[in-house]
Length: 219
Image 1: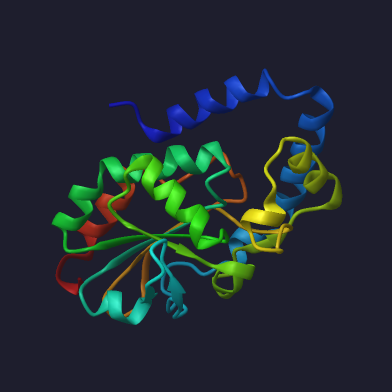
Image 2 (image 1 turned 90 degrees about the vertical axis):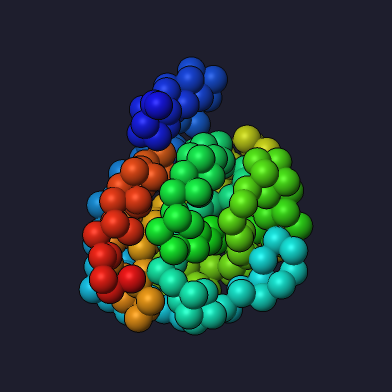
């Protein structure tokens, strides 16, 4: 099985060939500035208590982290939205390992700033077996230290690419989360974390499984 990182790299190479050079320059510069900001290092990490939240699912039901943790460990992944092909690839990879995650007593939950209707479309499209939650306004992402605002020129590029973040993010088009995945134990402590300013980089599902195995008796 091809690892996710290899698939993401291939996707990036293919997309770069179809994006005009002037757009790529804006995207590359914004990526460097975000990396240089050091935000990834300031986000919640291993040993931190996971901020609590209650968010609506794609079906409209509210899910609370405390309720999920009462049943077992939680794998919490933040993604930008269904409009992002890298996010779709990462979620599909997690879906492929969903049985392995649940076999370890864990619950997988994905969070994005999209409106619930958009999340439902994503869930239906990929047949996701896990919950997809809507963090409108990115308040939860902010608590985890992941939320950031797109610079003006990058927001303009996204508009030209037809992403329509104004609509899918319900009037919060500039705010997105860094890609992040956490393994949270039943006590609400983050035991494993992947956070990156590079939206083309994502946690490997195999590493998530290994982190769940490492919980051992504390899970």
